Amino acid sequence: MALEEFENEPLNEREKGMVRMRSITNYGMGVFLMVAGCFFMFPTDATRRYINQYDPLVIKIFAVICWIYGAFRIYRGYKKNYFRD
Image 1 (cartoon, rainbow, N blue to C red):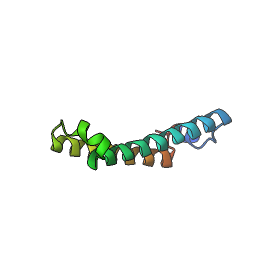
Image 2: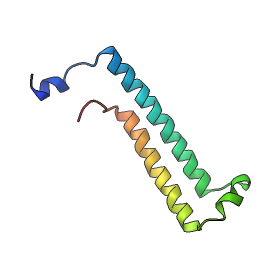
Image 3: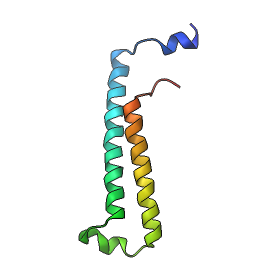
């Protein structure tokens, strides 16, 4: 069996369940990271006392990294390309 034929095979039930679970996990982690990035970029009164002890530039960079990685996790959950290389 050639590699191209293997890639066109339909997924069995176990693989479908794994894809569904990984997709939900990626969506959840993506949303969590996007929200965490918002809390770091725009701190509330409750979190401001913890965040102010660090360099503001580093906090902003970390918030942008959270947003980028969160967007990537959401994209990966949307594409569902787990068993194909």
